[in-house]
Image (cartoon, rainbow, N blue to C red; front, side, top):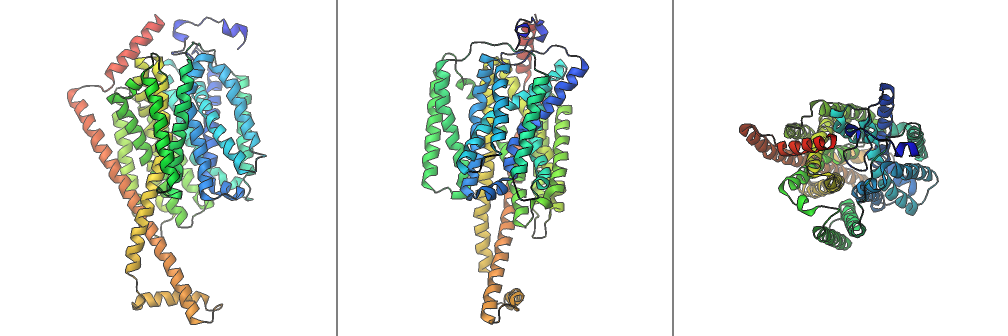
Length: 555
């Protein structure tokens, strides 16, 4: 900030709602367009950092020569860096101002993206991914703050939702453009695009800065103790969910890591519970409303693993490569954008349960459609179901964020840190847990189906014998020994049985997802009907408290 900016006196209605957020003065239309364009660029770029890893992990694994557990650590590292720093950065913004953090995180993001162009070792890539997750946690709010500057006063919370939602659009969009970037089999082009986007963001922010933010002395020494306990605890829990499905749950170190993580988080909560000015308000977090909010947000993220784990895993099993999934992810991208637009247009603070019911109903429908998969399933088969799931995945974000934000703001700006922690953990840890738990279910059911199918196959059966002979006939020109041909035919039949068992296991996963979504729909639907019958608004008290807060600030 310049001296002139730091001494500018804003009108009461222009002042930020809380320290660390930029002021919201009236802007001329060209400047509002500029803010919106920069916000979209930053939001997509911050989402691309994670999407480039999640969408191209097999290629990165191959380029670096990594094992499956080592590759999983890369995903865990990004999630750990992101979730561990997201809530503490709220207080840093309040203490030092958004502009100062921007001058740290944005060049840091550029430096990390540039470093990836030269990193070719696993250790450095792991460190960079962790740092990239931490940087993205400061980069994401910058995107929605820019978008909020372009919005009228009544729609600024919608601007925040749009910024977060655009970050979700980046994942399917990355899968659309990645195959064309990786045509030569090199991942360098992918990193170059990421570096270019970071440079564009740096230049755009330098051209059009955000208005100044108010600051407050909010950091206390015990905040750093809480962070030192809470962050490694969360990191250990994330590591367990990222690795358990691969190294399996009975691996000894997973138990130690989970116990250590829960112990550290518990100690951090005890410290916070006994503070006068806690970083994390444990009493509020333990309230019925916030526990319900956390359960709903995490459950939705677990259910939405149907797309990121279920459909992708099924199509990969059936031999579909990235080039064959471009059209599918183009459709998913369009559906995601449509879901974001529909969420913003239909958002009603007085009825935030109905959008969740719609999302749950869509998940049930999409999962049941996918549960009919066979070995003839191809990307075109799941266009409709995956578009439905993609729409639901983004449609729920708006009302979920609005619910938590209203509850936090009605209690005062100090509760924003606690809300940020809950929402970040529910989405990040919920996503990791969803993929891990569904993956475990798929493995268990595959073994069951394999045993059932194998026990029903006997070479004494004429049809089985004919099938083995037919499969072995493919080797007739290279294998003259009939016994060797029969052995190869039996091996090919075993592969087909394993593939069928895996397909049946994925169908079971889809059915379980549909059943869980249906149960959540019944629970949420019952609450919604009760509120409708009583003529009550679930967040009436929070809306009234927020309105009173705004009235006091504007005089």
